[in-house]
Length: 317
Image (cartoon, rainbow, N blue to C red; front, side, top):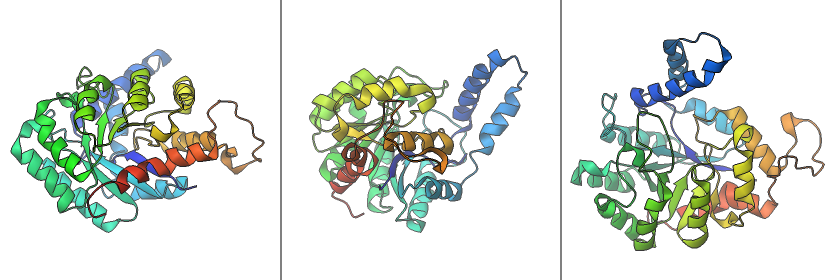
């Protein structure tokens, strides 16, 4: 079965600001606290940063091959307005993702964003990303300090609507250095109604505000969600609820690489497909977790839905 991972990021400190990763490290440290072991913040942060040195995505490509993922969508959010001190400007990040796409056109698709508070320059850059670099959608990150229904986004939405480009929107909490208030799916309702030619994808919608996300997908024809961030180890109830909701035509597979590691991604894929674990044993039809998908629904989630969305775009692939 074809597998497209529709939610990944290049694991690089060139694109992920240090304050963002420091916030993640603080949450990791708090999670480790009950163990009673003495973990230094610097050690936890150093280990996290070490996983963000895959600047040319070679490690990601190797992981894709190992997992049987034929293509990945690289998401480039613009943190540069909200979090200062990064290595590159957002324009430089666009250029580097464009070069990466040029090197691996059969393996990657890019959705990129520019913070709307940068004004006209942001729109110019986004259009350049589509028309010069070949990007295929927009990535928005409301925790940086704006809502999906901000009128500052109207020029971006108008362009995406005219080109039938998808907009993938972060939903729910994130690194604690950013706000969570702006990232609720209710703020997608107004733009989804005003811009029917845009497909809005609620990122992490399987696990963050899942009830609201499912309702949006059920009743707004142009709203989808992805399952990025979901782990068998912690999110089985949410996945069962989603798969029982009868919206398979609106669900997209995404891993949230590199936040979610290959072992967890592999387990999720195998459970959803009903495959033997670790290459051992035969499929006996058992489904202990209750998330095995019928083949037609699995095809929708793992490839057909995202291919349908990308196929609507009025841009050259």
